[in-house]
Each structure stands twice: as structure tokens, then as C-alpha cells.
Amino acid sequence: MQALFNTVLATLNSLVGIFIGGANVIGIFLILIALVGLASNVGSRGIAAKPTSVYLRSLVIGSFLIIAVKLLDVSTLTLFDQESRKVLDYTLLPVSGLNEQSRYMLGVVYAVIATVGFFAFLRGWMMLRGANPSEGVGRAFVFIIAGTMAVNMDVVLRVTATTAAQFSVELADNIRLFIPS
Image 1 (tube, rainbow, N blue to C red):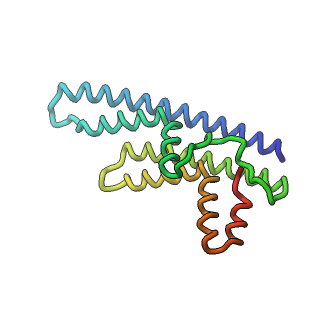
Image 2: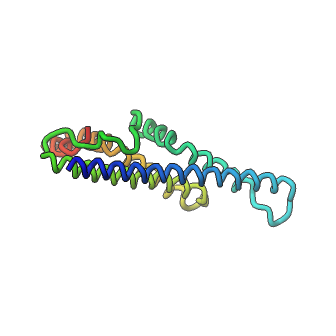
């Protein structure tokens, strides 16, 4: 079972690497489009010219996509007041209370959730680029916050267990069984 966990984690880490590389390429592409658009927009004052805010938004979001991993750290510090761990590391296994097979299967589930969460985090930033002020900004922030929470599932479960302990100690203990180390 440990071999399956290690294989899934290595595969998902490769996928996260592709996500990071893709975010860097898209970020560079957006920055280039923004710079070319700003340069061509300065000289022309015709009706067909796009507003400068479109290019500035592409410039900012492109920059954010290039530093997506650091931006995830900032989001984690903002939401949970603690440093973010790597998107996928080997601390995803629950501590104790479960048999070995269940621990490794939960570790695989947490790894998949963290990978999907990182993708949602990146997607939220991409949605923010194309969002109209009246629609889509809230949806983009939901993706960003939910992605941050999915990557840091261990912290979310600790907060949930602490909150549940106010009402039911038994429920909190059951939640703590599933908290990764």
C-alpha cells in the first residue's frame, strides 16, 4: 500500500509540475500580450482601441501566474495564519487510529484533493483576468479560496475539529482520526 501511495504522489507531483509550468507559460504570454497591447494602445486613439484596464489586468494576472506557488503561500498565511506546505508532500498520511491500508488510502485521497485544489487555485486567477466587474469576480475568489483550502486540507480539518469540539467532543475526536500529520 505504501508503494501505491508513493507512486500516486510522484505522479501527482509531476502533474502539479505541469500545472506550474503551464501557469508560467500562460503568465509570460499574458504579460507579452499586455505589453504589446499597451504599446499599440498608446499611439492609437481610435474607436477600435481596447481600454487600458484590459491590458493592465492581463499584466497583473500574468505576473501572479508566474509566482503562483508563492501566491499560494500568501493565501495560506492570510486564511490560516500559518505557512503553506508544498502542494504535495509526504505528510498527507493520518497520524494514528487507523490501520495501515486506510492511512495510505486516505493519503491518496488527500493528494488528489490537493492537486485538484491547486488547479482550482490557478483557475480562479485565470477567471479573475476575464471577469466583468458585475459577474465572475466572486466566482473567481471562490475558486481561489477553495483551492487554498483544498491544498491545506490538514489545516481545514484541524479547524473543523476544534470547532466541532465546542459542541461534541466525540465528533471532534472522530474528525481528528483523519487529520494528516
